[in-house]
Each structure stands twice: as C-alpha cells, then as structure tokens.
Image (tube, rainbow, N blue to C red; front, side, top):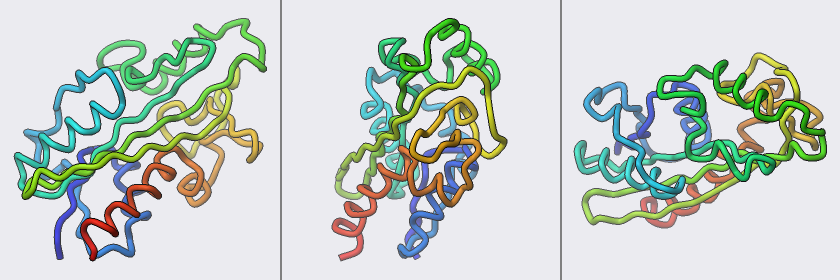
Length: 200
C-alpha cells in the first residue's frame, strides 16, 4: 500500500483527513515519523504558497506523495486578519487560548452584524517522482461570538458560530464538522484530484 504523508503533526487534522480518505488505497502517516520536517518555515504570502511549500519540501525529503494544507481565519472587520498568521496571531508560540483572547480584544464593541468571518483552507498535493502538484481550496462562513462555546475542536472553533447549524464549530460533532468545514470542502475537491491522478 502506498504511503501518503500528511505534512502536519496536528493529530486532529490528521484524524480528519484520514476519515475523509478512508476509501482510498493509501497508508496515511503524519510528520511524527519525520521530526526534521516539523519546522518548515511558512514564509509565503498566501495560504496556497504556504501549503505548496510544505508539500514540496516534505515530499522531496521523504520521497513520498505529500498532502499539506494551510488554513486560517479571515475576519471581515479586521480586513481578513489573522489570515495566514492565524496560528501565531498573538505571538510565535501562541496557544489557542491566547489567540482567541486577542481576537476578542480586537473585536471589542463590534456589533454582531460586523463580526462576519470565514475559515479558509488551501490544500496542496505534491508527487516528488514527477514534480506534479495541484491545489484545492475550501471555506466555511460564520461569525465570531463574544465568548467561547463548546469543547469539541481546536483553534478558533469555540468562537466561530456557524449560522446554518446554530452552533459554534466546537459544539458540532466531529461527523458534522467533517462535512461542512473549510478543510472538508478543500478535501472534497482534493479527493477528485487524487482519484484522477493517483487512482486511475
């Protein structure tokens, strides 16, 4: 069985991808087996640049087909910030809690209607054998609440309210989240690419 490397150490993310790709003939592994690849500098100016860099560097060093993503939160009132800086919004090694606190501070006094936001994800797949790559993107619309709700999630999930579900991302079951999230949307498109390019 061919290996597919997910260029991430985030167990939640790897689990999500593994669930989505369970019908494909791949053994899915994460970066835990390759500690030297854990700190690829994300110096791109867009999600796509960062995702592609992670996929390419990881693939070339391991000789494995690699799937990488870069994702984050875009808040309209903040002109799309934190965007590509979502994970380090409040500093280089910021915790989820610190990032959430900073976000709430920046949106203090902002009315509900103006707190619109989206999670955006760009995925890149790279095959080192023939320098093949493709990207796919997805998003999920919502708004930022004034206080966190829910335990099931990570990052900005407890503050991100999904109108059509009437719940925050952190209040949704993994099953529902895996159907509607930005990553699920990007992965849906990526599955088509994988099917066409690697499973024919």
